[in-house]
Structures are given as C-alpha cells and as structure tokens.
Image 1 (tube, helix red, strand yellow):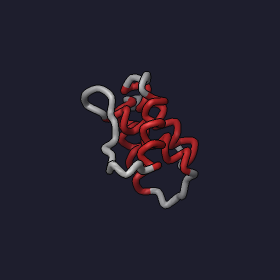
Image 2 (image 1 turned 45 degrees about the vertical axis):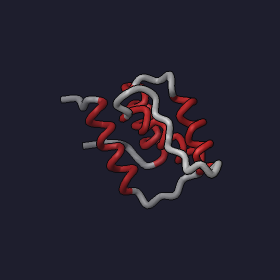
Image 3 (image 1 turned 90 degrees about the vertical axis):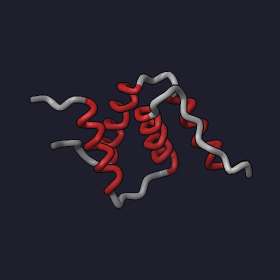
Image 4 (image 1 turned 60 degrees about the horizontal axis):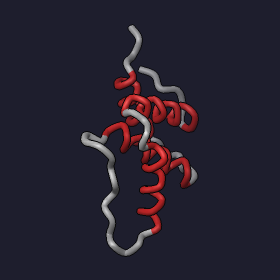
Length: 92
C-alpha cells in the first residue's frame, strides 16, 4: 500500500530531527520554511521577534515569504524532497 504524503512527511521530519549532519544555513532555512508552511494551522506564520533586529529573524521571515504561495501539501512534498536530497531516502 503506498504511503500518503502525510506519512512520508512525518517520517522525513523524524529523520531530519534525529540526524547529526550539519547543513549550510540556506538548507536549514529551507527545512524551516517548508516545515512551518506544512504545519501552520491558520494562515501565514511570522516568527516572533525579540525586537532587537535579530538578523536570524529577518532570514527566517524571508524564507517564509518565499514559500507563502505553496499549499500545505506542496510544502510537505518539498520537505520530503529536501530530506531525501540531504539525508537519505524516506522509507517505512
């Protein structure tokens, strides 16, 4: 029986959460943005700011803006693709 995208997404998230691999900042931002877009319950997610003009917040917001037009399903698929590209095949 073929896996659903949701099942693959959850397995991919588990793989990404458990890996010891180090990734370039741009790859980490893609993981972040696809995950947030795939799991956000209501509308568009904007990360909280610490009001210090943190550069990381700006990069996170920019990454989220780049994926804002993706559906949750598309974001899940992109997340799985990213895991398979950088960590390994998502299997049962």
